[in-house]
Image: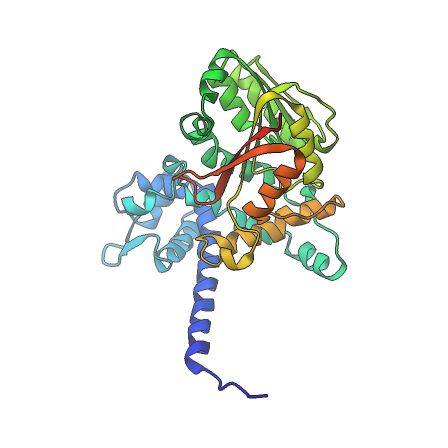
Length: 358
C-alpha cells in the first residue's frame, strides 16, 4: 500500500478553516444576544457612539455591552473609531441584523446556535445509546420557531407563498376550508385568517404549549374564523373536509411522516391542494456540498429535527430528507401531481404544490 505524502499546505488550510469556524460560532452566539437584547435595533438608529451611550439607549449594563461590542468589532460586524472610542453599525450590516430587516434578519436565525448547544449533553448520550431528545428539552423552541415562521412564512405569505398555487388567493377570498398541520404558535394561520375573513381555518399541533400560544394570539387579534386543537395528525381520521392543507417546515419532524402525508391526502376534498414548505436540500449529501447553509441545516437536523422524531419512537427522517425522498413519499401517500418550487427570498426552503389523484 502506497503511503501518501503528508500535505502541509492542506493541513494549514484546514486549520485556518477551523479557526474561522470557532470565530464564526462565537460571533453567532453574540449575534443572538444582540438580537435578544435589541442592541442591533438600537444601534441601527444611532450615530457613532461610545459604549455608555449605546448601553443607556438600550437600557442595558455598560460593562456587558462593551464586551459584546468587542466581539462585534473583532468579528467584523460593528465598526470602531479608536480615537473617539465610538462604535457604529453600518447600514449595510443593519440591513440583515435588525427586526426591520424582516424577512432577511439573520440575527433572529442565529438564535438556533445557543438553543442547540443546550442539548449537547443529551445528544451525546443519544450517540451512545440511541433514542432521541424530546421537545421538552428545548426551552425556547416555540419562541424561536415563531420568529422563524414570522420571517420565512408570515412576512411573505400573502404576497409570495400563496400565489405559488394558481387561483388560490382568489379561492381564499371567496371562502374555503383550510387546515394547517404542525401549526406551532399559529402565526401563519392567524395571518391567513386575518387576510381572508370569508375562509375558515383550523390548526393542529401536538404541542399543548404551541396550541395555547396560538389560541392566545387568535384571541388578541379578535379573529372568529379559526380555531386550534392539540391533535396527532398521524392518526387524523378525516375524509374530504378541507380545500387547502398547509404544512410549513413541519412534516420532517413528525414521528411517522408517511402516515401524516397519507392522512393529509385523505383529508383533502377532490380538487384540493396540499402546500408544503420543507428544507430545500437533496437526499444525497454530495449534492448538498454547495448549499449555502448546508452545514447549518444538517446540524439543526441532527440536534433537533431528527432527534425529536426518534424521541417519539419515530422514523427520524430529519430536516435534510431532500426533495427526491419528499417527492417519492408524496407520491406514495396518494398525491398524483407534485410541483417543486422555490422563492427568491428563501434560500433554505422548497415549496411543494400537491394535488390528489382522481
